[in-house]
Figure 1: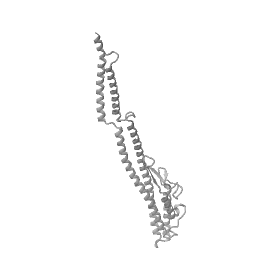
Figure 2: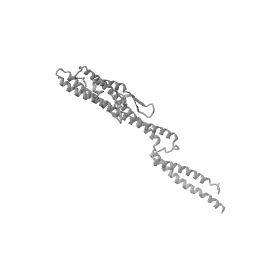
Figure 3: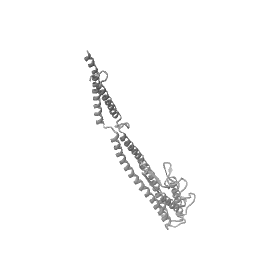
Figure 4: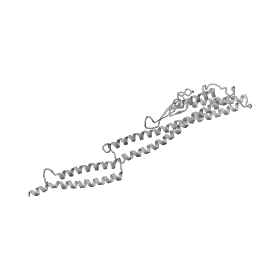
Length: 292
């Protein structure tokens, strides 16, 4: 029907052109940003899932840093215990030499002097060992294994949720160690005294030193086991981060091959729609032709 008031063809062309323009705008936005989902309007459910995956990925990334920091902290403590072992081994050498029949009183006095100095160093290692500004085995004044970071159970956040934690408790082993060190040398707790372990004691001090060495080994074994576990946690987190990131990418990232084809098709439709709108607008001129 020819009509001056209503041009159905033009209205249809306008609607089609508006829809094509909107689709083209969306396509160009995706090509420009690289994301298939740029707002909740693009994919409400997909955006929700992708945001949840992103939160998990970021949490696991921080957890990876936590595991590495935890390993570094325990390696620092383990290094201190390695030096404790070296000191105790030297003290055992001195004790073994002191209680030999060929050693004179003067020899034992000289050996005791070094033994006392080593006892003071045991004190220094326990009081001063620290990581990131936190003392590990003491508050800096005590030598009984209290007040330090490892004097109580510690917890590592090894995942993105509240349940993903790892507890390490070396407090009992640390207390046993400091007790053993106290029995090894009087200068461990009182650096101002002169010891008598080698000049007035018996060779039983050798067994006492062996007990201290065993106590060091026990806490080092705990720290080593915890560090190994954190290494496995780190590797597993890396695997989960890789796969979670890939999953989020499949939701959020634009497929350039597909979207480029869509954009080209929409541009062609825009050109065709514009031409159709121009032609449909000229239909009203046929009414004038009929009236002439």
